Length: 148
Image 1 (cartoon, helix red, strand yellow):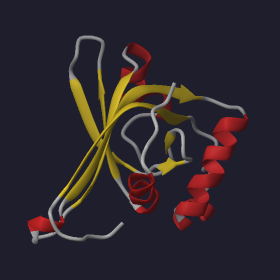
Image 2 (cartoon, rainbow, N blue to C red):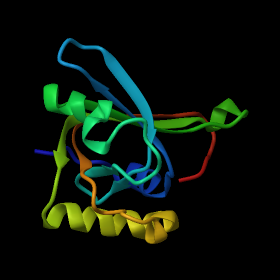
Image 3 (spheres, rainbow, N blue to C red):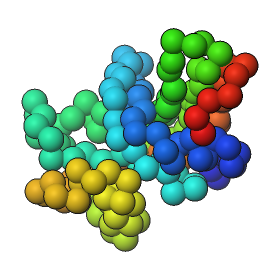
């Protein structure tokens, strides 16, 4: 069952534009990449979009890793030179691949709402997406006020 994410951290996740997704192969080799994502209040979703890739979508390292090892982490952070305003949310949980269905379609619609680029991207919504089911959430923030 997904863990509860406090409202303040939910707002931070909803406004954030990029996170860093960590997956690992069956033998534990890590792989970390920047991703777009959306949070629906329960799960996080990251698309396999139509931007150019070195391999076809089904052979992407993050998907290969998820097929071998469902453990994932996503870190979303805020950086400023004023280190009193630093912040991050680290979500660890289970990841899987949604190849089709109403949940995938709903997540793609949420991604289009959040990222205008996806509204006009040819082929967006045809590829699978990564679903992250949070099991543990760690947050940290500096001592001073910062953006939600």
